[in-house]
Length: 72
Image 1 (cartoon, rainbow, N blue to C red):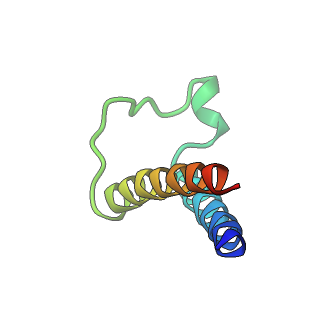
Image 2: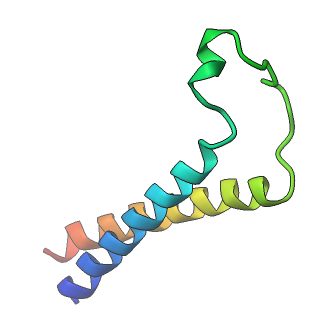
C-alpha cells in the first residue's frame, strides 16, 4: 500500500507540474513590464477545464499525501 501511494504521489506531482506549465503560456513575463492588461477576463473553454483540473489534481495530491503520512 505504501508503494502504491508513493507512485500515486509521483504521478500526481508530474501531472500538476504539466498543468501549471500549460496554464502559464498565456501570460508571460511581459505582463510584469506593462504588457497586455487583461487582468479581469473570464476563463473559457480549454483554459477553464485546465484550471479546474489543476485544482482537482492538487486536492488529490493533498489527500494522497495525508494518507501516506497516516499509514507510516
